[in-house]
Structure formats: structure tokens, C-alpha cells
Image 1 (tube, rainbow, N blue to C red):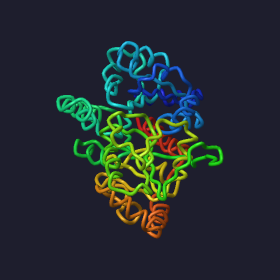
Image 2 (image 1 turned 90 degrees about the horizontal axis):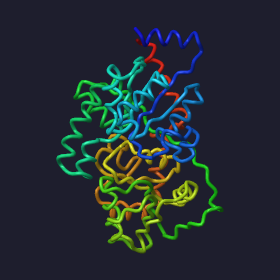
Image 3 (image 1 turned 45 degrees about the vertical axis):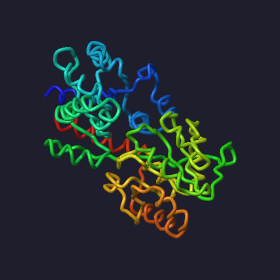
Image 4 (image 1 turned 135 degrees about the vertical axis):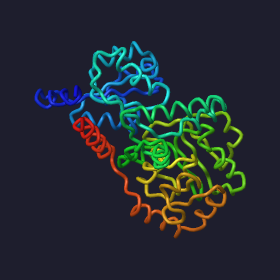
Length: 355
């Protein structure tokens, strides 16, 4: 009833709806930067969603890992900002707004919505060991079951949530049309057939499997990787496995534009890179696992656990490359981040009006 009354007051007073993002992001400036500044740094995911929500009339604010883990600091943030929606993203502090709402917050008229993409326990098990993974499995289930609502961009997680009695609202990743100028890049891909991987290369992303495959391929087939340096991959560096490191955004786009094919190695169907790859109209190779929930093998992507064979096949078959791209363009439309933000706006408003 309190939330419904507040909604009525908002409609009559004209006050903008307010969203507080509580994230596991570790950047000490996370809470201080504006939505535009965040978007300029990372024009995707939550940065793109909040930036575009502001264009739809929302006020937004952020709390990073340090503030989000401190219940008293977060309660002060909530009372000062008075959000209508608290959107939690990441597992570490996602339960805190739920735990402090009654005992610590004067402002309690908010809904806690969790943004769910990764399988948290799997990542923690890979990075920190079995015990940490076991604990995170249980925390993840508590987050999903206790949040007022869950938005997921993962069809796999949507299925998992149903097993726990929770129906997650599906909103996919978006991608804006890339803007780049190949005449202004210093990087030129030199292979006869160039494959590109972009983004995080942590072990759980399984990037090493694609890198190892390059050892059995001729040097004319080249794999270029952009993103933060991971020393465990250094052993794979060669004439046809080339690590470009972290690049400015324009340079990264120019590398992708020069690719003959793009590769997704994680056992996920919800990577933001998937929609971004689709914007470039290149054939895609993806891991044969959860990506089958999104792609159809040999129709709009090659799904494989043998990257060497998949790369060799595409390099030898231009007609297959064209077919995969044409089918992906038909089967897998990509929405802009403004359109994705509109989906969030609609969902949040429906939540607030339903109480």
C-alpha cells in the first residue's frame, strides 16, 4: 500500500521515477560518475541501460561494491536518494538491500530487482575453489528467491529460476550500430582468414581452447584477441594467435570490422559480445553448450568443441560464411540499447503500478 500511495504521489507531483543501481563493481569512482560518463567508458550493459533510462525521464544513482556491502552506508544512500527501484547487479551485495530495508531504512517504498546473467557458483568454483562455489550456489538461490523480481538475459538462468519457483523476466542484451573509420586505425589484420575474439579472457571463459586450436592451423589463419592481458594465455602467443591487449573502443571496433569470423568461447548464451558480433554481419563460431539455446548449428552459427576444425571449415568455404551471416540477420535481430532501456522502463513501471 505504501508503494502504491507513493506511485500516486509521483503521478500527481511529477517527480521522476528513481533507480538505484547496486553493483559489485569495484571502481572507487563508480558512485560518483554520471550516467553519461559511465556510458562513454562502457557503452553497453548497465551503463547503457541507465544512460538511456535517463532519456526516458528516470533519475539514476549508483552504489559500488564498497558502499553496497556496507549496510549502514547503503541505508544512508537509499534514504537520501529515495529510489523506486533498486536494481542489483552482481552477487556480492545483491542481498544487502533486502536485508536492510526494514531494520535500517527509513525509506522502504522500493522494489528490489535483480539483474541475473552469470551462473555465479560456477564462476566462483572456477576462480576460488569448490568450497567458494558451494557457498555461492546457495547465495545465488537466495538472491533469486528473495528479490522482489528478477530480470535475466540468460535463457539458461530463466530455466534454472523456474526450478526454484521463480519466473524471471527475460530482456536480452542489446548493441548499438557500431561507428568506426577504418582509415583511422593503426591496426591491420594480416591473415588470409582472420578470426577475432573480444573481451574478457578469464579461465572460465574457456578462451584457451580457441588459442590452443591455432597450434594445428596454418599461419594464414589467424586469431586476434582484444582485452585485458591474462598471463596464463601467454604460452599460446604465436604468429597466428595474436594478443592485441586492451584497446580504445574505436580500435576494438576496427579490429572487429576487419574480421572474417568472430568467436565466442564461453559456455554462455548471454554474453554481450554476441549481440555486438551480430551487428558486424560476420560468421560466428560459438562453444557447443549453452549457446545452443540462442544459436542454431550450421544455420546461423557454427557450434563446436573443435575450434581448429570449425576455423578451417569457414576459411575454406566462403559460401557457408555468407549463408551463416544471411540466416543470422534473419533469425537473430538485435535491439539498440535505447530499445532495451525501453523494455526495462515498461517492466519497472508495470511493477510499480501493480502494487
